[in-house]
Length: 451
Image (cartoon, rainbow, N blue to C red):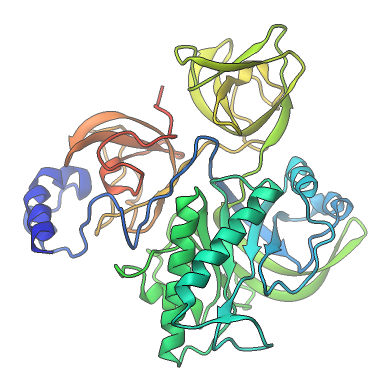
């Protein structure tokens, strides 16, 4: 502990410009919680495999116990909803899922729906309501791990790729029992670490008066891994994602919140009626591959990176189908600098793929490639207009625990042992030193190099 504190004090003066701009060195030294790139709680890094990318959803969504039929989803495309929740597994899942399959996931995504996967696993022993399979203080950690492993298995079977956020459903519980509060934190911590180790983001559905309160109270605790996103239930019909009870707006602050703002009610679109709960969303959801056709007249090379300087790993015949998970920027080919990342991790130029746009990003159909990591700095992390401390500050700083939605990495000015800077999906830059990527001092595969 003393050695870590000494190291933090000695580096403080070197990184003032990167971290806090005009703040004084003295003020920086008294800030608690300054940490290096996270390797432990609360900001555990996600180990993204090469065929991974995170997907973000915004706007309104709905959840219903049984996944709707594809015909109902087609009818509901005229609705104000763009995301649908699916209860994809767990011992306490209350409804059968005759529709839910790999084909359903693929077809729903092709229609334009984003999916919010929820796993109804073990519940706290003090859960309020019907009898359920539960966990206690003594076995919460082991059930958190085993439930997460089971969730990953179900997610893979459905085609929910690494980079997806998987949400653990934690129902309302009696938080007057201290052992129960500790059990919830242990369960979610192990759920989070297990998902992160396999390349998935961690989400949790919680009641505003129990789970949200306890996870917010332990937000900076070094005992528990922090989930990447929270989905709160509070049926007040207010869609706001800020001003939550006992949860400062600086917690889960950057595309990390969803709110179930209205309980079960009937809604009809296109002649199809469902009983739904309504949600407001700005959070990570599922990543699903989309099938597109190769349009080139000769075999299309798939490469290790987004440019022809990267070696080819295979080629795709004209007219064949490729599985696209996201789009990033790379070498300009013809009229476009967009490259598609495939589900096997390779890249192909969008110039020769039948995505909706041949000259820019297909924003409505294909998400941008992103590899989020939580901000680890004890004070808000400044974002800049370029990869270095000489560039101007840009937008609001990112509070601790915010997701830095990284799209690529490049070399910039040195900050406490690393020259790696992360470009975010909004075009801003942050030093990799204070983001929980796989490396705090070098490149973090599979994040591509910025062109």
